[in-house]
Image 1 (cartoon, rainbow, N blue to C red):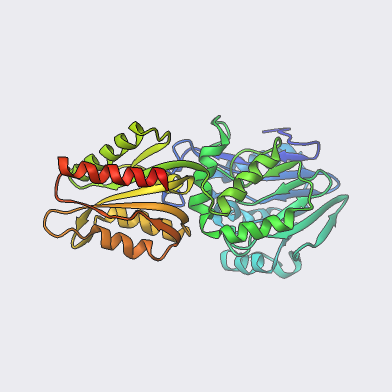
Image 2: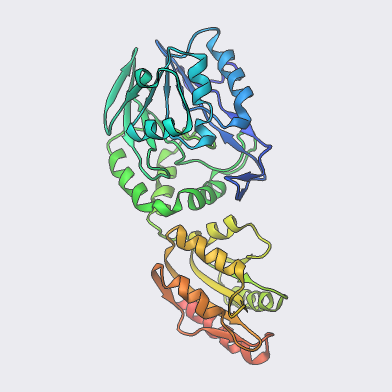
Length: 389
């Protein structure tokens, strides 16, 4: 990692993690994830955030290779979640004269996680819009509460017009895994940050008059080119505006009969010329991928089996994920299946009715056990409504 320079003064000292299988204990990360940390070497040595416990040894190796025996003067803490903050105490112990920069909430949380020697004397508390000069390095601090913890703040390095964005603009995937930014950034956003669209929109108002040449997130690649593209994507996502025209068919099937209905509807839609028809099996597919698709497209069909006089749990789980992420502004069709007392639709509606700006298809389709010839017209009618609405 020696001399892994981003700019003349900024060095990347983060670590790729390919050992962890589930991020935050729930999101599959087949291509790993990066824990980003940065070193500014100017008249002072300033570290931007630490890393997760699994990356500790490699992170310290990166620090030592780039410091060449010099000390760390300051640590700026953007976010107190342990995948970024785990090593605050160990770094403070290693460099007892190091000052720690954060906001009031940062230090409240820090005292809950750690017991740092001379804590009160080492704190530098910054507030919204405050500017701090460290040596010849000038920093401006922008509070970003609930993106996605209340203490989150962004740091603007005025000397090089770099914005350190905490979890914002991050993505799943280790840095040495080369892939397009968009897909895994979208999955990351909606599953990690998605609930807090209003807060992201409020943040953009604070960034309007700031020239940004580089975005340095805490996960994923450093963004240097076409900054407007990334900001535009975040603006779309955080406003809950559908990104693409298309129809997600999310189904929860016990014995395969409801799956057959979902696949038949997909075939009808495709035959009618719908370009983006996406099927998600809520029993077997990654839930975070289904959540991503629900937010990506402007329409969705939910097909589920009845179960225990309610709905098959994978569908309930999916809808509760969406509700928790503030899902809204979509057209939804509902298909239920049941052999003697279909109940899935009512249970689905109980959750959907708690969401905002949902436009339901005119008719709910009820299948009795298996798809029959007489059901095809109902699917065709739903397809026409979805296409023409």
